Image (cartoon, rainbow, N blue to C red):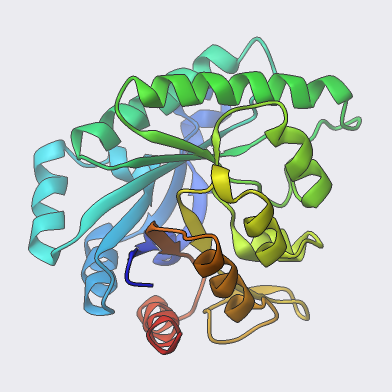
Length: 270
């Protein structure tokens, strides 16, 4: 793990949601953690991480100067901005890409190396085959706008989207050239073997989300517990010579600082 740098997602420090303005204005529909990002960065650094990932809405709350100061005060680097979109509806895609572009601009201004997006909407009347083609084409546009800003763009398969399990992952990555950010908990929860998927797509993976989850009752967990075979995942990352940033994520935990420390304790043992 000497070639790995460890980051943490700040989304655990409050309830997860989005901007209310997004109900009537797609361009304003960013992700958001309703919590104190100053506290999150301080506690992430205290747990031993050297990088942080933020949702686009939280990142755009800050001026460049203020967020640079926050990073410097905690000895952190901004590793990635996380955004998302429906991606399959032609009429609103320009609005969605405009919002992702704002997040990419801010990430680039703060010298982040990565941009991560999730999405691919499930229609109320069922998934259409053409939805995958539309998603793939949209992800290529995200990759292009990221490259224009010296960012590496990644697609993050996610529960509740049209890309959840292994076959859907294989399908979408035949239709786009964007990099793959595997989220180990989401892949496992959708019936996949995250270690096998990491081996299969090693040449598309330059950024990873590590997360635990338990099946019953369903909940995301720190890395030291739950039903995700994280030991096997780390072995697969070593076997494929992964190098770069690894971002641990939790989504929700009663004591977020405790969750961050628990995952770091596991990583130190690993």
